[in-house]
Amino acid sequence: MIDIYATIRRLQREREEQRKVPAHVEFAHLMNEVSKEARRELNALYQEGKIGINETINGKAVFVKE
Image (tube, rainbow, N blue to C red; front, side):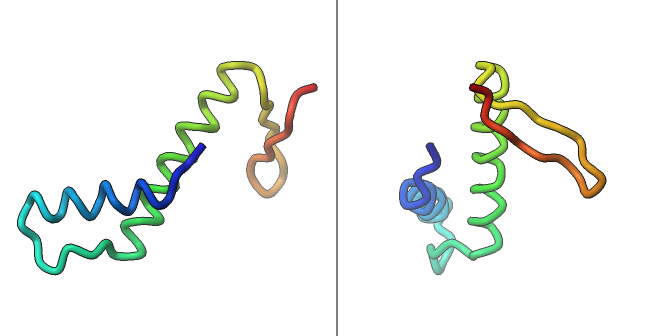
């Protein structure tokens, strides 16, 4: 499960290690990282057979397999 607090801490720590000032994380960068994490989780759930994905007119839809 995505831990947004941990993601912010990790990104901030990376900035601190790179000596970037200020060390705060820009919202757009955070959202990009959270999106990547969500995609990884969705891929894992799909590989485990827990969710399915359908193509729709407007894009993709996700559903729980029961």
